[in-house]
Length: 135
Length: 113
Image (tube, rainbow over all chains, first blue to last red; front, top):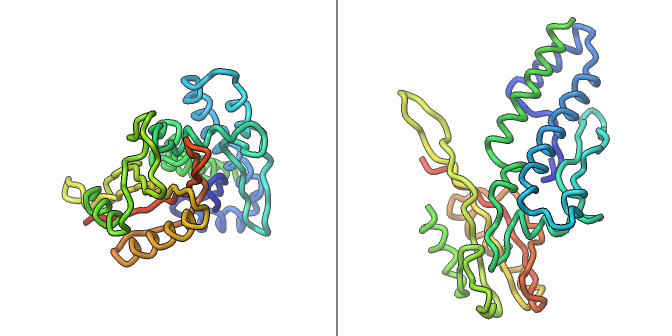
């Protein structure tokens, strides 16, 4: 998974996916829901952290709030974070710092932090368990 | 762990700084390295105590020589791997304060048990 993409990853995912598929559940729909909800969670954290950096709003406006789920064979993924091809380039200064500007750790953690990864995994597991319970 | 990382980075014979620690009027050296500690989470728990620490750092190279930015970062990656560090990427661009220099950085991890 590239740095700005989210995939479905939690402990027991493969078993849960197999179980859902065998029981006739809509695996693709469950994966898409996982990815959309995960992206919403990460991006909302980013928006919250960007309030401290507001000047023109252009960098925050580059947050990819409406990314579609992309499928590469059986693997689904979704882009999150800043779109560097539009107005998101200043985010590199903020997320990684420079030799003269310390990195904004909270902004970085909103995407890459351990707590974020844990929240995303828990969210995805919850969605899959719900899909199994709804069968 | 930070001391160990700094010790390894200093073997390349260029200045090593904490990211963000240079003052505004300080001149960039021709080539230098910066680092930043992102996190140090517990690896796991048992017997009501933590077992091991996952250390997470950024390591960045800045230089007025664009080729050096790539090659030195890869040399650092190689040395860190030889010393037990995990290097999950080959690098990404990072921003520079000065138009004379470019930068590349990577995440490096160490499981300290």
